[in-house]
Structure formats: structure tokens, C-alpha cells
Image (cartoon, rainbow, N blue to C red; front, side, top):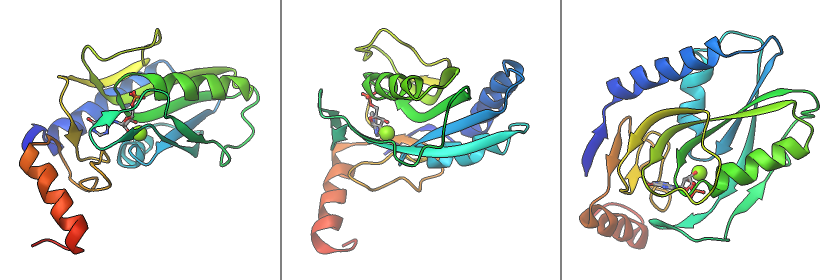
Length: 185
Ligand code: IMP
Ligand code: MG
């Protein structure tokens, strides 16, 4: 595993993101909508740097298996959302890869009557976008490598790492050994 962003670099990045959100903040209360499961660490760190009034809600989305996104396989669950009519919404996700997840959720939030939906991601992979929209706030641009940590997973593992790291084939093999045996060897 190779560390791409240390915990210190991530903390500085979240400071910058929170400053940017605060400076562009409209008068209305802000509803932060996090995308489960990858955004939970980011959402927790980000909202503690925002000024109120802030509401928090979560949606769930999943689009990929293993290390690659499968086009057209996006599943979404929006049933935890509060009434968004007239609300200022900040959609928060871990990573902008093809952008299909963000695009689909931004559309869905607009259809639920939000007055404005802006989006924020911790990471954006270069050269991968398949949609016309871009996130309004981006923490870090990274190369096209598969990354884990700070909420991001490989097959459910590594979300707890305090840093962001790229995954080698040996790390992928280790995850499969752990899953097969029920614990590390
Ligand atoms: P998109 O719809 O292709 O932009 O994919 C976004 C989703 O795919 C993210 O919310 C992540 O859950 C997942 N994803 C994309 N790239 C990575 C990665 O490098 N590591 C872990 N998850 C990723
Ligand atoms: Mg995700």
C-alpha cells in the first residue's frame, strides 16, 4: 500500500473545503446530504467545521464491485431524506470517478424540490469523468489509481484507515485471504 494523502494533509484539505463552503454560503440553512458508506468520515470531519444552521441527512449509493465501476449498475436509496423543498443542499461524497453517482443523486435531490444543490467530494480521479457535471468543491485531484482509507473501501475493507492509500495487487490478495478465512493469517 502506498500512502497518497496523510492524515495531516487530509485535515488541511478538509479545512480548505470547509472555508470554501462557508464563504459561498447563502442565508438559508444548509442541508448536508452524505452518500453512504464512503463519505461518513469526510462528513463527520466537514460538518464540525461549518457554522450553523446545518442539518444532516444520508443517502445510500453503490455502483462498483471490487476495483472497477460497472456502468449502469448504480443502486440508490433515498428513503432517509427529509423534505427538501426550498432547501439549500450540499451533497457530499468520497470520490468523483466517472461522476455517474454524483450526477444521479444531484438530479434526484433537484426532483425533490431542493432550491439549490451543490456537491463536494474529497477526491477527484483525473481523466475518468463520463458526465458533463463537475463537483462544486474538490478536496484533492488524484491520478487514476484505486484508493482506500478515510471511508473508501475495497470490498468492504480499509475504510478505517486515517490516510488515503493506493492499493497494490498484494493488498487485494490479502483482502481475499481475510474474507475466506474469517480473519488475518
Ligand atoms: P462514480 O459514480 O464512477 O463517480 O463512482 C463513485 C463511487 O465509486 C464512489 O462513491 C466510490 O464509492 C466508488 N469508487 C470509485 N473509485 C474508487 C476508488 O478508487 N476506491 C474506492 N471506491 C471508489
Ligand atoms: Mg460511494
